[in-house]
Image (cartoon, rainbow, N blue to C red):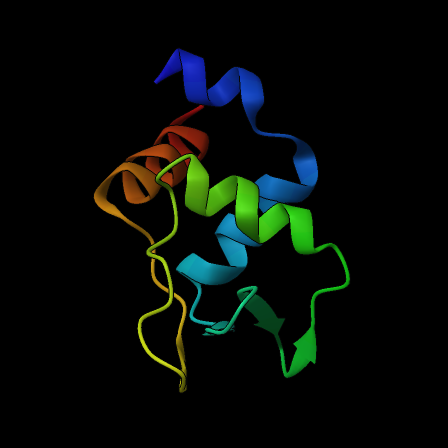
Length: 83
């Protein structure tokens, strides 16, 4: 997990916490769009980074769907809570 931790900034951790708390949705398309508390996240690189790191499940299909953590994402959030 240490390799992931070194590449995850404070903003990424905040987004992961929001996803874990059920506050986020993803919209698929040519670029995935992260929606937090009903507002589109202006930092599109964040969602790309977190999906690429295997921490957030990529959007599936054209509909807006609840954002979900991968098992690695849940483990990462758990390590934050423990530390």
